[in-house]
Image 1 (cartoon, helix red, strand yellow):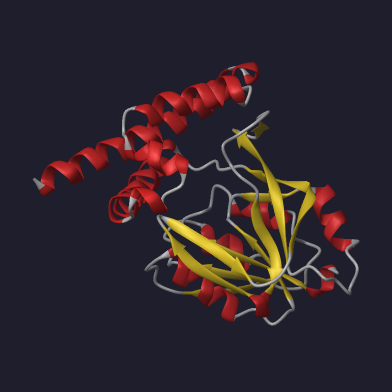
Image 2 (cartoon, helix red, strand yellow):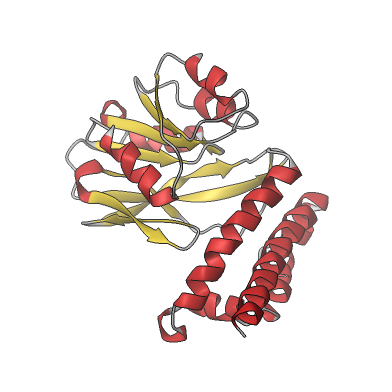
Length: 255
């Protein structure tokens, strides 16, 4: 199965992460990377891997960027990865052992979130469809990120992907603020009846940061992870506070 799979990665200033991601993709003959004109050492790292075929495209939104990447894939299957995703050995073996003839068109993978390299017991990350047939798939807009639409049957893989982002805090804050501007537009433009329960809670502004703190520390067991779990909980609370601030600002500016 592995010979029919091409990893697809988007990058922008991912020097802190991309090498660890690529080190776990040495089994593939071709890796498609779409870079948004990085200004750090990302490009130097990418060109040091002979499997990498690099494409540059000015970033407009995640959906367009991913769909552009799909156009560069020539294999039957795509393995869609963020630049801070590390494929576990167990997941690689599982993909390798998938039969050539499948009635499945896409596979979800579960995640283990890492803080400074340490996997946490539980996170807010839901499973994501990362392995799919190219000719059955397209990316659609979904708030600050993208939604993959796969036409056909899907299944869940048992192996994990490690989400291990080691970019500095100022870059994380920059990204979260940017994401929350887009997320604010989505929440305000969508009627409550069309929003999920989670998004309806987030739209209330006050409850979401409190709920996410309890969810991360208690329900997901982050308190048992020591300072790593506390750090992650604070990250998620800060992200929700940023969203609340943007919602308040947008609503007040309308009046």
